[in-house]
Length: 90
Image 1 (cartoon, rainbow, N blue to C red):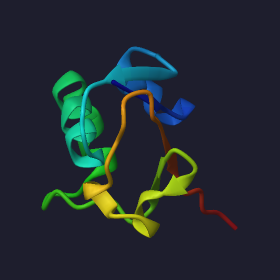
Image 2 (image 1 turned 180 degrees about the horizontal axis):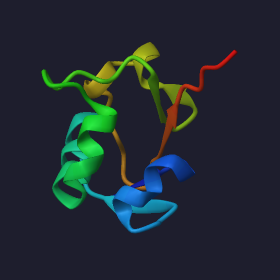
Image 3 (image 1 turned 30 degrees about the horizontal axis):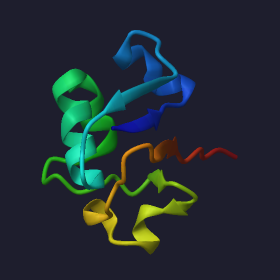
């Protein structure tokens, strides 16, 4: 089971929870489990073709998944996944 940590802007999709625990062997299967639990969160994380949104960073442990294997990054039991949307402004 992996622990997914969510920033405050995404917590409304999971009843205000700061983190949720889901099963999955890869980041893709973890995100699929998140989608099953909270369908409204899906479009904030992946686009219509199922690709990770460019402006959202996904850390598996200490590494951003795009520097690893993307959605195919293995997730061991107890791994912490942090979802961090980019913030822009001026």
